[in-house]
Image (cartoon, rainbow, N blue to C red; front, side):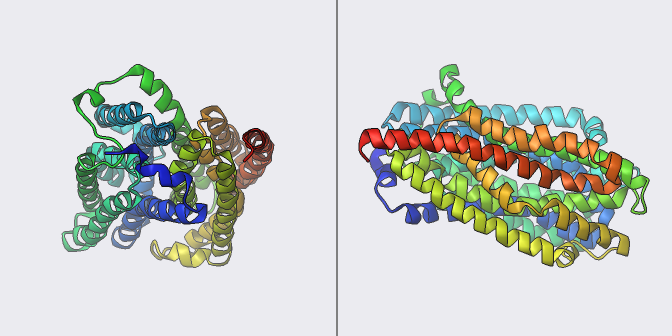
Length: 459
């Protein structure tokens, strides 16, 4: 078990390294996003748009669980990569063990809170009289899978940092394949409706969690022992701040969806679309948005071990080059996504079932307006992860908070006052433009700092 096995991160060609780590990471995140997308597609065709509306109401609880698991997992991954660059084996091993312990404890607490607060949660996230029973059925099952969901997602980041991105991808992919196979069986053959979709989902999550446990006995750069799992406050003070950006990014989605759902229900009821159509449509748009973000974060998070290792090893010239390549790739991802959303919104919406003309009308508007600045969004989110990889949690957190909370939430609340139910759709483009300008100023200083260090080192 040799930590120097990751030395190639400071020596191999950057483009080749980024492909090796980013592609499996993209696949892992894409598959995670597809869990919900697959449910939506089968529920939309087997139950109808009210069933999809119910899953949108429940979706935030999985995002809350994901936020906590990524705070622990991504924070630990960034910490491990920096420690590996410094050849600090003890901190690497103990950091991973602490992440496992905290993931287990936090997932159990989250499960208990969700089960006791079910009705309040559904109400806060915009359940309507028409979809509340579907929402309860879906919630009751999905909540049971929370510990497995959190453990597998949190450990995936650690597995990638340990130099095994392919295993991380496979563990998630296997779970999703199981979900895809069981979804139609549960919904169409067994007629279990939304409850069946939820059962299919958690079976896949249990398998993914089992594979993560298996990996803990086959790690590459550290070997866990009993003492590794003992919680050490000094370690957590380093790990959790590095993951705070991931936490806030996901948590902001919950806050935005909660506010958005309630606003859309309120103003939708006063429009020709009614209360259920806008909320259901925007929920679908947000989940399709998550697919693009899977590519975006996949490139950035996949590069995290490379950035962290080189930064810890003092190879700042390589760090700067990684960011440059990352920005080119993210711009391409954002551009391709924007073209698809502007030209083919009806076709994308149609994947989730065929509904009324009003449903389709609002859906097309939602895709074209809400996602029109995907290029800027991709660059912003990738930069936030990059800053996290450099061990700059405050900057990373600030960028995430600005776009996803400070700007987005007030805009969702204020824009409907003058634009009605279509107002919230403009919140994302405005937030992207303002945050991008702030990001340019922030990164100018960060890159200047790296450049000075490079000159001092004579790189």
